[in-house]
Image (cartoon, rainbow, N blue to C red; front, side, top):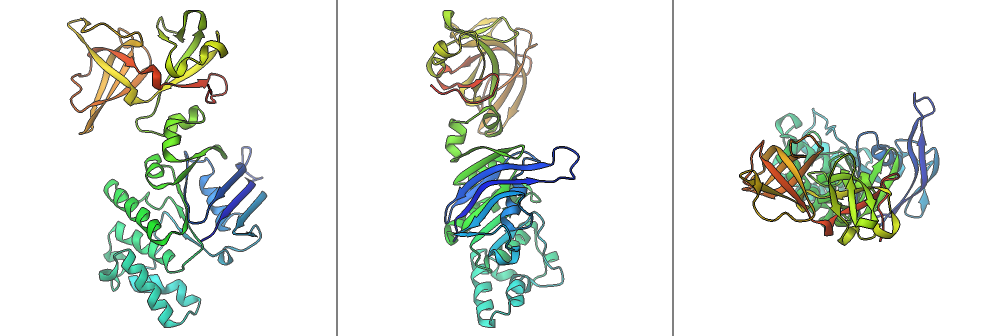
Length: 379
C-alpha cells in the first residue's frame, strides 16, 4: 500500500488553442489503502490528474509523491502502480492465463511465483474456468475482469482506474462496481478511480473528489457531498435527479424569498433563516432535492386541502415511472410557463402530463448558495 500526495499540481499545454490549463493548483492527500474517486464532467482534468500520478503526463508545477518519494521525474515503470484503462487492451492471440502472466514473465520472475500470482488473481476474479480461453471468446465483463487480473498480479502499491466500465452495458457496470468494491475489501490496496458517472462515484468511493475546469470543488464522503455540497456546481452534479434551483431575492422585512421574475414568494424558515440578517435584498439561489418537493394534485380545479405556505402552482410536464418510485417533472405557474422542477414521488404518484398541481417545498431541507459566487452559505 502507499500514501499518494499531490501538492499544488498543475498541468499546462502551451500549444493548446485556449488557455491550455488542464489542471490548476490541485492538492490532495490519499491515505494508505483508501479508495478515492475523481469525478466531474468531460474536460474537468480528472484523467489528466490520474495520468500525472501514473507518470504518463509530466507535471508542469507542483509535486507528486508516492509514499515518501517525490516521483515527478520517475518513469511510469518505476512507480510501482497498476493502471486499468477504459479499453481492455488484452493480447488477442494469448489465452487468459498468458495475458495474466505476461507482465510477470517480462520481469523474469520465477515460474512458481508467476503461477502463484495468476492463481490468486483468477480465484479472486472467478476466472479459473476461463484461463484457457482467448479474449474473443469472453464477454465484455469477463474481459474487464481479465484486465483487472493483469493489474492484480503485479501486486502494486496502488491501482489507478481510468473509466474502466464505460464500455459495458448498465447491468454489467452494476455487476463490475460490486466486484471492484469487493476487490478493494479483499486487497486493502490504495485505489484511485476516475469516472464521469456520479452513481459510480457515490457507490464506490470512500471519499470523492469533485472537479470542474481543472480545479477541485470539494473532497468529502459520498453522504456529505450529497447533504452538504460546498457550492452550486457540486449540488447540481451530485445526485439523480439533479437538485432543483430557484433564483431568489431576500426580503428580510417580510420574512420572504421572492422568486426572481415571478409573482411568487416562499417563507424564510428553517435552514433559510440565516438569510434574515445576512442577505437583506441580496440575490441568492436556493436548492431543493427532488425528494423534498411534494407534488399535490388540484381537485376539480381547486386545492384539495389548505395549501401550505411554502407551495407553488405548477403543471405536470412529464411522468417517468421508475418502478419503486416516480419522477414527476413539472413547470412552474398556473399555465406551466415557468421553470422546470422535478419531484421524486411514490410509485403511484396519481398525476399525468397536463395536470395542474401545486408543489410543496420542505423549507427545513433547502440549501442556500450565494447568487454571485455560487458558494454555500453557512449559518
